[in-house]
Length: 213
Image (cartoon, rainbow, N blue to C red; front, side, top):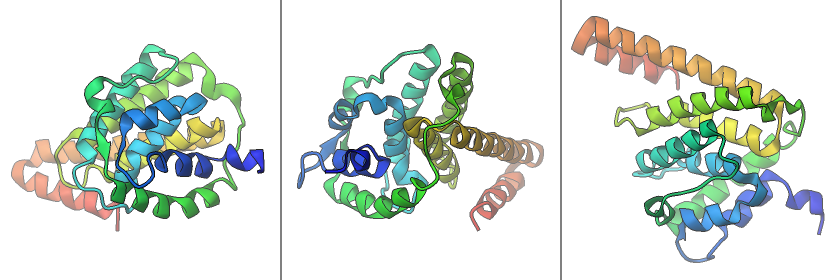
């Protein structure tokens, strides 16, 4: 079997989500199998249900909490991801896992044409702190029970995770720029709410909805 294919992100996703084939899979199972892909692949997997059109109600908030914990670990310089017991026992339903595999396999095969290891600045401590803070902000937004606030931050986390997994500095820079733009847009929405009250909340929702149209 072609070893280079085995090291692709799409190959990793298929193998990880095929764990316990035919049965539900826990986050602990996934975390134990990520190997040297570490944080990046967990960010990709945990943001999938919100970042891509994979209907998975009920996952955004708990996954957002786990992503927040992982982001704190990145910020503190922890070399490998760790999940608390309650998070390790969180189960991803088999039907959802299969849907994720079918939705993402072709997407990753397309992305892998452009993603590759380059620009080693991604491993510098300063860069690590910057994208860790960005991930904290995005996962915090995922946790908030506010309509239409899950998809955009999850997409940022998703693309940062891909860049980290593939060690692609150019892709990481693009993902960070995307994240900074998202922070600015959400800050604008918050300002509208504060300035205009209840009417501002409605307007802010319209602004956020417009980002996806």
